[in-house]
Amino acid sequence: MLVTGKAHKVGAHIDTDAIIPARFLVTTDSEVLGSNCMEGLEPGWVKRVSKNDIMVAEENFGCGSSREHAPIAILGAGIPVVVAKSFARIFYRNGFNMGLVLLEVGDDIAKLSDGDKLEVDTGNGQIRNLTTGETIICAKVPAFMQELLDAGGLVPYVKKRLADRQ
Amino acid sequence: MSHNLAEKILQAHTDEEITRAGQIVNCRVSLVLANDITAPLAIKSFKAMGAGKVFDKDKVALVCDHFTPNKDIDSAEQVKVVREFAQQMGVTHYYEGGNVGVEHALLPELGLVGPGDIVVGADSHTCTYGGLGAFATGMGSTDIAGAMALGETWFKVPPTIRAAFEGTLEPFVGAKDLILHLIGRLGVSGALYRALEFGGPVIDALSIEGRMTMANMAIEAGGKAGLFPVDEKTLAYCKAAGRNGDTLLKADAGAVYEQDFTLSVTGMPPQVACPHLPDNVRGVDELKGLRVDQVVIGSCTNGRIEDLREAAAILKGRKAHKNVRLIILPATPKIWRQAMDEGLFSIFMDSGAVVGPPTCGPCLGGHMGILAGGERCIATTNRNFRGRMGSLESEVYLAGPAVAAASAIAGEIMNPAKL
Image 1 (cartoon, helix red, strand yellow):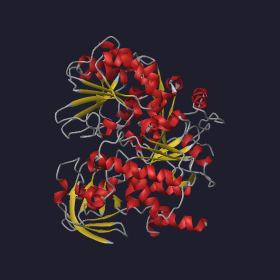
Image 2 (tube, rainbow over the protein chains, first blue to last red):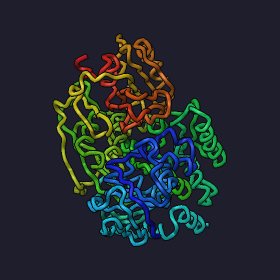
Image 3 (cartoon, one colour):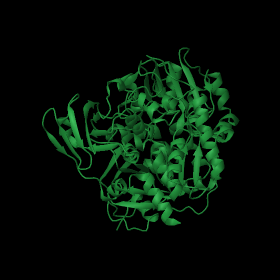
Image 4 (cartoon, helix red, strand yellow):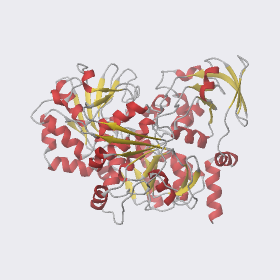
């Protein structure tokens, strides 16, 4: 998948209460959650987002609670990709399960600034910064996780495992 | 190969041979948990997976503890979804109303988690059960749906950081101070993707409740699990909770650790985590004079009977400051009754406290103690992210029960030794 959009840069240790505060966790609806995305960081944050824009973050993005509402809110806001220096563990698994593309780039994060236009090739883990002309190549995901991705995510994977058992 | 605690427990639940950190293995799980916030999404995924039944109706726990007693119509609708699912699946361990407690205080006292178990929960503080020697970790709802359907899930074998504690604890210094101190040292991402393993004479001497307080906050350093060796004390706790057949468990001699260090606690004052991250830790005296509007004593971190006794010892015969709202939430019905029978509620009420029902409530800014802009709270909870307990302009400080109680009396952050 090729995603082209504007980078919205946030800081380090962005917690899930910043991504979607607990008071919004009374629904599982992605549109409603999306309309409140990053409300715990800055009220009205989501208004700056156009469909297919890209979130760019420093280290430990998504730390805190296990709420899957966090990746759902980001997707619901129209953001299909998050690029970060690093991700918190539970958030990483959740994003992956929800179909939110997460690219971990380490210190290369410094090559991306707020407002840059980015082109992300999710299949090859390649980020082109169209504003600066720089390219970042991401490390490959472990083979087992790629297998899960190829199966279409955890839901179809479990579905198949259940069918195989019968 | 020699295994550390995390590797040893994972190995006992998989047919694959664990030879290194970073390896991905499929493990059978002992218990799968979700709550009133995370279960509705898990149920959605469970249905999308085409699963017709849970893998074992005795090994799924659904605990409606976050927004209960239901704070509004939407949260009531969510609990309804969970209740109907529990009924439909015949889930044995469903809790709401009079039998519900804060999940991570409730499941250990019911004997549903114990040594050597693998517990996965759609709640990040699932790591609490590491205090009993279980490999317990938080996951999202869809992972939990998969585990509910299959009875197994995949893990990346984490590298382990071993932290040993030695020395003598000062008065009013306990488990919460130890873990805050460690998080302050490691940082909020210092144990990212890693397991923590605790040891040393201070840990050996710690109560099981104290160990659970510490394990509970492993996630605040980014940790996947926070593990304690299983000793006679653990076995006695588990037996009293109605379990049988648990055995001692410790790391193999020669086990490999990514880091292995010892912290001396002698002379360490009570610790407080300042806004807005749990690793922003200082000694309590550095914060003297900082006024507080609210004090919360409770949660999966410090809502157990020992915590309430510790608070009561400070509050006895004293009044909370007139400008402070003191909210005390015993974490489970059993703890509630115990506190009542021991006369702790009289002490709390004489001090001007509000005693509420078992609920996660204010810890996550749910209900029962939300902060207005400009307000400051000191709480025995586990997170102080910006806006966690209410307004984005409010502040949460984290401390143990003794410091929280002393601060309620003083109306400012206070070292109980100097009250």
